[in-house]
Image (cartoon, rainbow, N blue to C red; front, side, top):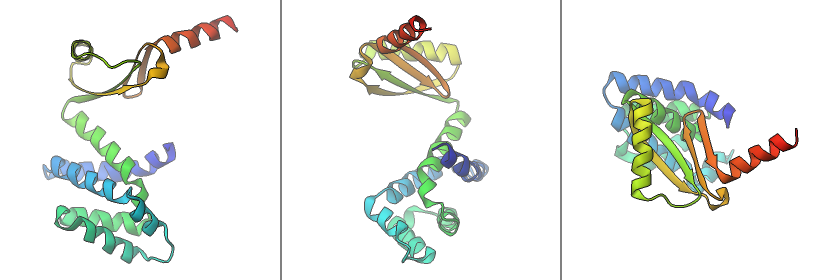
Length: 178
């Protein structure tokens, strides 16, 4: 995955730069979401990975599926990815593009994994604290993971705060076995 992100980064940055210059960030976000959906479909994956189909045939299929939902630049992007055999990187390209877009818009994406569903009050308190700490608008992605036993894991970019019972037990185990 790290290698895919490394390869996908220049594509995402190029698309972001183009979208920013042309003030089409939202349009590119939609096109990348569509392309990701298409290339992650099991039937399309089978077609793309079949060596009997040429790059031109694969490109034609994708452009046919997407139709007018891709503008000229989006169609060119599909051609570039197809000719460079990089279609499978679309999920990573989209992820990197969305991160760049969020940063541009001053939005902080936070992933919260909780042992139990959070109440609206708990979620809003977490968001309030994160807004105050990072001085940015916060968008959360909540996921319930009962195996955490209790507490939450908050991931903000590369920073992870593990405030779970499982995490504390693991830290105790590590401290006791030294």
